[in-house]
Image (cartoon, rainbow, N blue to C red; front, side, top):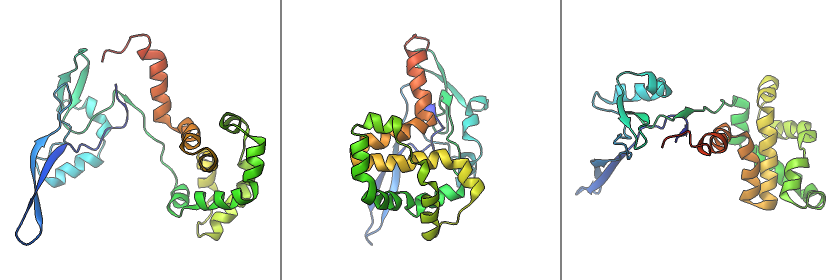
Length: 217
């Protein structure tokens, strides 16, 4: 069962053939298919212009598109082919603001926590000796003004409305960076997966649908 957004639709196997001038040409020799017989590759028979249009239009509307070829899984579940893999449950990520994108692009999170941990790492470890305790009790929101000022000093123009829209994501990401410095990747994912809508939706399916045998694979 697939949860998330429609995949890009690239499922070709290409083999490079070297030419005498040192360049190479890639020739498609096969395609990838799912067990139900669906081709993963988005149709390109009408040329590259239409190919790119279908990618950027509304790929998650594939289930309502009567032109899509229907397939059946071994459990007789209806699925569609011809343009990536359309999820059984569509869960989109919320778009981040330009302010948040700029924070990531300019590596502000990591630079900020490195400076922050120079003065606070020992205190954090002493007060929160386990990742579980850190996860449930540690709050970085009191560093809001310091973080905004640090970002401004590193060429990220503050946008109040965009910050407020994304502030939960921003604070969680700062916290995750701190956790990764102390507990490694386990610290990072234990925090970031809490705000991952697709992951949370998948967990609920395991808890509710799959365990009650309602889903036919």
